[in-house]
Image 1 (cartoon, one colour):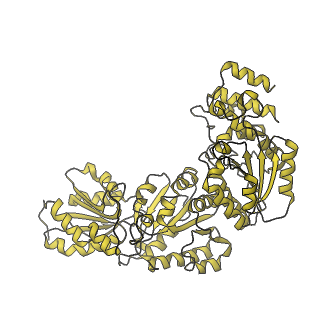
Image 2 (tube, chains in turn red, cyan):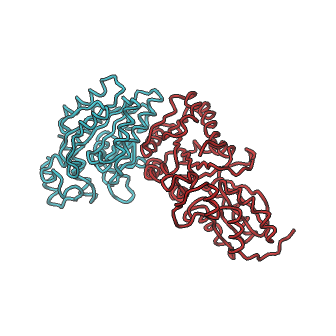
Image 3 (cartoon, chains in turn orange, cyan):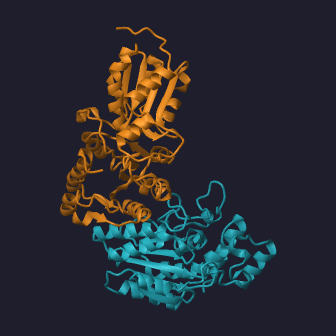
Length: 315
Length: 257
């Protein structure tokens, strides 16, 4: 997985914010070293390639926060989230210290590297800790705006950077932490996505219309805090919701949407996510998505098999 | 060997009905000298920016820290009476979100030391002269993060950092290959071995740390006795986490009179 626009934006944002704010410090676990050289050269006292010792990097970052810095920790997702979970819990969250985790290797992006480099439990784990935020941006501008909005707010914020982007362009003004975006309005079905799966939802629109549905698409770059108001407003109207996410079936956005809407009554709900089994196959990202149903066709199959169209579409 | 602080520890554990007496006795002389002779602090302003930092990575020895914090004005006698009581601020592990003067919430071993490495790095980035002290247990040195942090601290040349190892033999109960001075030297640390119950030796070691101009981190390996001060609790037996009976309490206080 090479560099992409969002990873380049990460480097550009560190440089820009680092030059404005003397309290930004970046610690990396021996990845993106060359990408971050502009920041390293501009802020040599505040860039550290610590090495292959992720729990220590996380504890050190909390120690830096203790002395008033805004630390950023960057490496491959499972090495922070899974390996250093106790450090996140105790050293950051319990002590009320703020910092930013910027991970690559979203879900199964490192598709050929197997379970060691996959991470699709990160939403669940981070959301289980008080004082956290979870953001899954899939365009460069989302990362830049949301990082600037969050990096010094005293919380521990995860930015899960995907290798594949959704391809949409949002204005800076439209992007706000905890606020979802309604891309299309509809009356009979709410599709809720985060990260690059917005692409699948958009691709499913026309076929769904041909099937008689009138879909509304919500895009949530912020998984926590959840935009409950937007979700409830939409699902109250459509009565039918499908959540599409590159995360485990347990503890992800799907569970949160169910919790946010369960009391509305008569709601049809389904989730497209990673089932209760490890992803063991090799191949491309796209092949993994197809196998898991995280695709246009997966959405169409799920809607056809799980939902009954109850309302006449008003056009 | 300080008897008054040990009496305070026994009283806390007896009345609080919980705690680790031997682990606290093992380190209390080190903390006594640290707070009396070396550490810079202001109990009226625990977050004074010019203070030195002390992190008790071996969190279960915190009764010793509480006793010393009370002696130096961070805690009141009334607060000491709330040890392990609902609504109190003093638990069996130190909590920086509750206790003035506690810099880190510890208890799970292997966290406080790398956290202190981050503090030391932060102070160096700011070009501040504050020093950072951290106390780890020898059993804690089983944790991989201790050696990750030792490696990072040397390579980042954190000469403002002093680790104190409470070498009371706990580690050797499980892993007899226990040459801690050789291990720390192998990691590149300036290493000193002392008697951790001898006030003159502790004081001299701290003066050696504060008096030098070096970017090599410094480790004081303090040979200690778990439970030192009351023969009945010395060693690695049942007293690790035992509460004294009324009769045992009386005998302990007599031994520490």
